[in-house]
Image 1 (tube, rainbow, N blue to C red):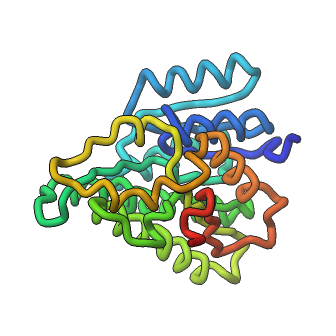
Image 2 (cartoon, one colour):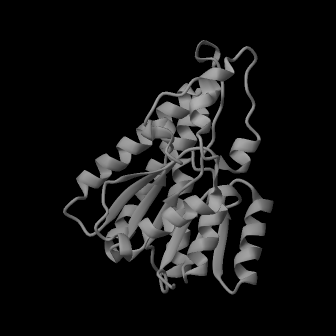
Length: 250
């Protein structure tokens, strides 16, 4: 399939995990990818993989917590490729902590990366997406749909991202743009592999969120993003797609 031929996709978190998998998937279907991250070596590896497969990608270092840099990155993407069709907000972080002990800096960082960054990029991208009839896919989490112990900031940020996506979808419901959200559960990425748990947690409180069918792979979520970003999903607007191995079904 070449669902993204002659289209341009802006992907955050492109250096690893779901961001890399999405970049590879969209590029394999013809998209010209503009990938951003704070990890230069990871971006280089993503770019190498895409170019070795005959795809097209440009990359840039960008801290999504900085509104000005978000706007500059979107402008650079449009300058490089002359258009923008897809914004995939995938960059994210998590910090486990006892709620009463969570440091202010960690709270602020999680909210900044997971919620403010996607909003800044939506602000910057929407005028260009309106010109092309493009769309936005935000990666939230099932933690934004249900309570999860020891991740109060993460849950708050992902719940905010889900309702932000819905609010934008309603604001632009009469315009030529689509805005959707994906809510995965545990996915085998560096984000999960490098999680640090605080002392004294009750592991039983986390059992439900591990699910019964195991963790998803990054490529599984990239497949969902690719569908929602494609013209095949032209009837899908303002949706939250739960790609969580049924964790939130029970």
